[in-house]
Image 1 (cartoon, rainbow, N blue to C red):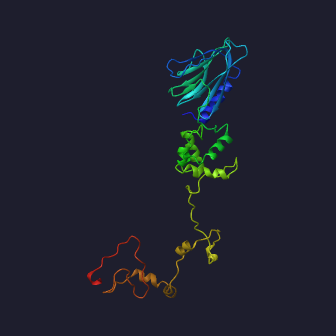
Image 2: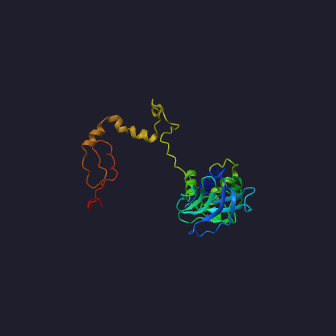
Image 3: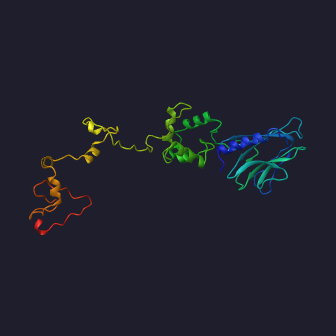
Length: 312
C-alpha cells in the first residue's frame, strides 16, 4: 500500500512532469469508477500537487483569460492499495486510468491519469485534508514531534509501539512496512509499551533524539571475559603471546600436585594401571589402590554399581 514516502514521490512526479504543460477541457472519469465526478472545465489551466501523510492534493489553477471563468479546484486523493499517477499519450491510455486530465491543443495531447488497478483509491473534490490526521512526518517534522510528545498521556500510547505507529492522528503517513522498518533499524521490541519507548524523547534535544530503545528492552548479552588477571596471578599467567590465562584454564592445564605425587613421582600412574579389588564389607564406589591415594572419581554420565546385600 502506498504510504507517506510514496505519496511524496508522486507529488514530486506530478510537479516535475506537469511543469510547463497547459491542460484544457473537461476532466474525464471512467465509467466503472464509483468515485464522484469532477465538476471542472477550463480552456487552460495548470496542475500542481502537494502530499501530506497518506493524502495528496491536486490543484487545478485556471490561467488568466481562460474560459469559462473558473475558480481553482483542489482534489484530495487517497491511493488505497495500488493508486498512482502516470503521464501518457492521449491515444494510448494505460489500463485502469480512472481519472484523466488532458493537455490543451495544438501540442500533441497528453493525459495525466490516476491509475488504480484494485479501485480502492478515492478522490474528494472538496479539497480538504481528512479530519483527524496529524502533521506530516516528512514536511512538518517539528509539528509532528510536538504533537506526539504533547499527547503521550493519550490512551493510544498504552498500546504496544507496533500498534501505536499506525495511529494516523499522531503518525500520519506511516503504515505496515514503515513501522516494521523503523522498529527493526532502531532495535526496539515491537510489543514494548509505546509510552515507555517515546518518553525518552522528552529528555533529548531536537535533532538529537538519542537512543530510543527502552531500558527494559532486549540487550545483547556480553560474553564473559575468560581472561581477567587477578591480584594473585604470576608471570606464568602471562605468556609471551600477551594473552593472559584465567585461573580455570590454568588449573586445567597444570593441575595441582598432591603431596604423594611430589614425593613418589610416577607411583600414582603405576597404581592406576593395576587397581586392586575393593575390600569386603566396604561401600563400593571409588576403589582404593594399594599404596597410593584414591583413584579418580567416576566420570560424568557413568553408571554406579548397584548396592549388594552385604553393603546394607
